[in-house]
Length: 147
Image 1 (cartoon, rainbow, N blue to C red):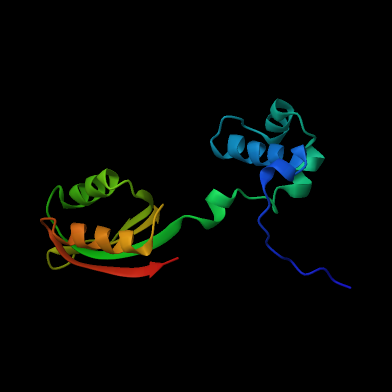
Image 2 (cartoon, rainbow, N blue to C red):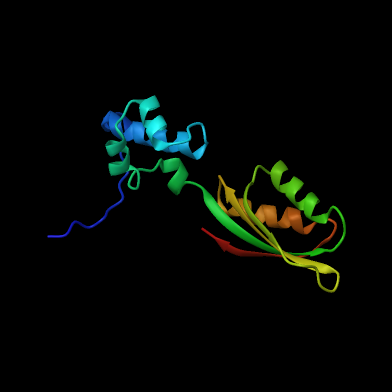
């Protein structure tokens, strides 16, 4: 009989120590504090085989499930500083910018798509959209998707 994959939430205090150490190795590798899985595993005190056994199945709840990703599509005037003012505003709103894609300007405007990770609700996305719409040089803004 084939096992069906199921996601569950478990308090970390009841997990075997190896699971928590796998999460630590993943963080060390992602932040580039360690350059290889071998050195990261050695640093936290687990075998590489334990790391490889669990790495694709273990995620921190915060990382995987509590943050929202949204995509904004904007038309911006082709003037110096317009995109910069959008990015500065997003920074001041504590939005984590994941991607920025800008097309070559045509007819005085450039299409820009920005993906963001938010920590709060979808209402936060709507508030960000409203704030950005008020910036000088933002011709149009649409919320394309939200996770």
